[in-house]
Length: 268
Image (cartoon, rainbow, N blue to C red):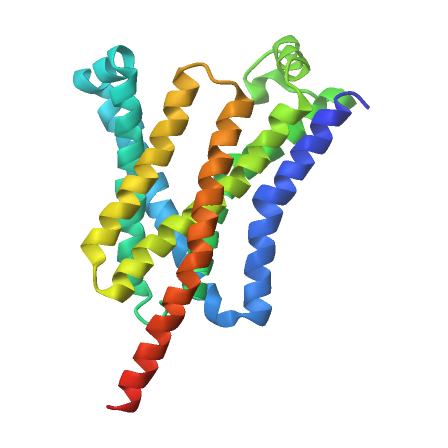
């Protein structure tokens, strides 16, 4: 079969981007039902903050404004900072609202973990999983002779050239990047939730927005500078490791919050 390497890579991406989030949700539903709610609210926060608000605002409203177009074309660095900070503002404020409104009784370390998994999981499904399914379908139609130019929106020659010039590793990076992204989403979630529990909501919300903005801006600037996909993914991996260490360190602090809460409840 032609394009076997690409087919395998897209299947792996589907397993990572769709199979893992759905598998986690099924596991929570069976073994850890108390984590289903924060998982689903985390997913809902991403859908509202990005899919329903930020992305339509960027593409449907701001893209028609002269100042935004000029910034995008004439000042790519400022454009990268703008994209990074708006992503941080919309998503981190969304996390904050999620815990303040929907998860008043779900504020443990494990709740933060589930929230981040739901938030990053739905992003993986939408931006990596669905596109991988679409590409896998097109590859199968090329192999079995049922390719439909009208359905795909491009000629068979163009599509074949595109796939022929794409390496399997390039495709796999799409799934690998989702792993880093989910870890970072959990890390940002823990920052916001820590601030909520500690009573320093504004401070840690700002830290989360800044951290999110720095990560996204760095990645966009690297792409603008012509960095290879290998370098970009390495940058993502480094940020993911930093946030993974933070996630692990946060666990002890959340245990302290729990002990203090239990003692205060005993005295009331």
